Image (cartoon, rainbow, N blue to C red; front, side, top):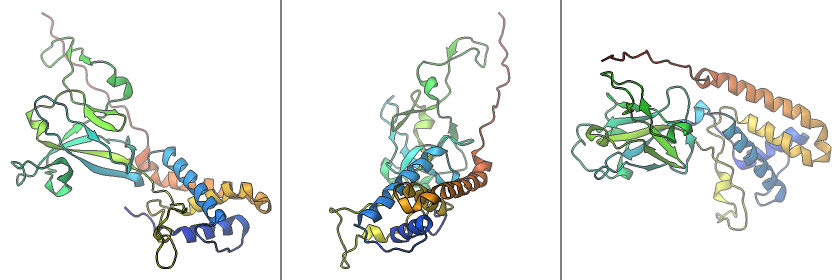
Length: 278
């Protein structure tokens, strides 16, 4: 989802130098000064990515069908475009049945798409924490008062870059499609080098693309990059602190606008069960 018009690398580098030294300069994409700015920008983007779970990077992706042979537990590898599993409020892995038009069709995982899913009913599968994965959970009480029984509740387990489950799926669960909430990976600037394939005008095609479209305020990346890049420019030493302060104000504004959906999850307690005494 596009949050802003974005900037081309040429526009970005020009704005960085203007914020840093108040001059308008033109560079070729293979110039060292041009590439230095983009390298700094990519470090700023990586810090922004890791700072918190942003709602504007949140996305629902279809993992595929849960059908597996026998008692095998299905596994799904997250695509390279995913930075991490999202942990915002009520984020989870969800199991949706196929639409009745496709219910009796055997469809390969990679051909499953959004239009095939029946969203009128679903199973919400919480994502187990790291500490939850190290031992087999048991219940203190069951529906009929039995104690110390295995916990039958289904959980999603993240192992490296693979999503799986804590137990084999039942017949209904195996017929579902798995979808999960994730944080997308921010696209980094392409830094030209000698391996780039050039167009007829001797320019790399990726140098003409627009970047930062997923970021609500690309000006933060411009100003934060200018603050970092000014460290290596003697004439711009006096601008480092003002640029740092300006970048922090823009980042704080983005966080404030995003805060409604990124608040910490509240603790929802379970009611006490009844244990029969025999």
